[in-house]
Image (cartoon, rainbow, N blue to C red; front, side, top):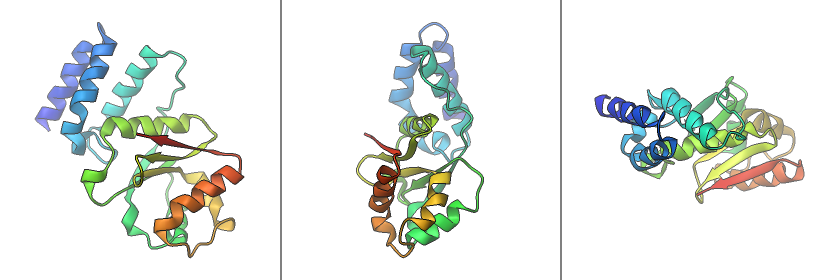
Length: 177
């Protein structure tokens, strides 16, 4: 953990005098500390607060998403859409982050922060990073999906079904690269 904490201290030192340089440093180095700074990482909250603060300094019109809570769960732990919706009903976080079990396919910590930030817009209910998992869902959207989608839909096809539901319901899905 020492290296990750030293990295944060280095960025913190840059932040007051040069927020753009601090952001570049985060972009270069965050992947090196994926396990510490990812949604499930021990320093994620601190990392997320730092990134959010820097982003707001660079763009003061950016809405605040710091109050959102996130839970990461393995995408492969579900067999069908019904089991995913049932899991959504059991927690109290705002956003479910469906991460691949192979952590090498996971989004970088900075991308995870940006994906969570998309939910500051109340119309956004689904964020897809890259071309497949990981996906993030607003928990309330998943809970409301029970009456509109086939619960037996295979989990591999669930993303498309949920995307279709979001669009039919007037909500928004976003893609991050």
